[in-house]
Length: 147
Image 1 (cartoon, rainbow, N blue to C red):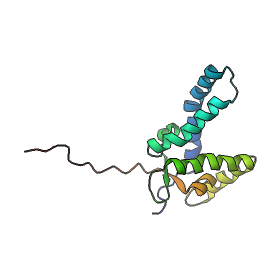
Image 2 (cartoon, rainbow, N blue to C red):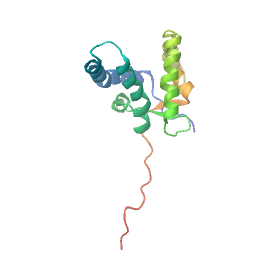
Image 3 (spheres, helix red, strand yellow):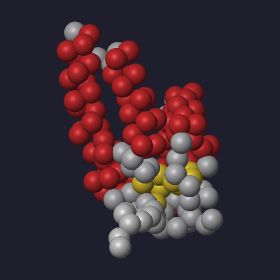
Image 4 (cartoon, rainbow, N blue to C red):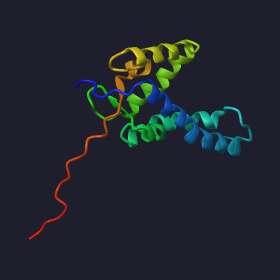
């Protein structure tokens, strides 16, 4: 399946910013209440990783920020993302950005701006892309037997 309706840089940036505000703020507050420190700690790191791994899997590729903006993550073949795909995208992609001291983030921004399919480094690693297409509606089966 071909990449359809890829989301561009600004929509993806807005979704990340919204995730940081709407989800990151409460996670930081909860981390402070749980550990007594406002700095990044094991609690906030764990909850952020779980959020990035689980929420897109159970919510059709959306995170809170992506849902607000109207974009979502899908696999290249159009299938929903799974935990393994999100692990590659979030954890392995994050490690690439960490090891390159942030240079990978700059490369990703350029890729999203320049590539026709708008795929970043972590999309290339995980075999995903971000689209404005809504999830496919499941065909409804019979609700009941009528006479």
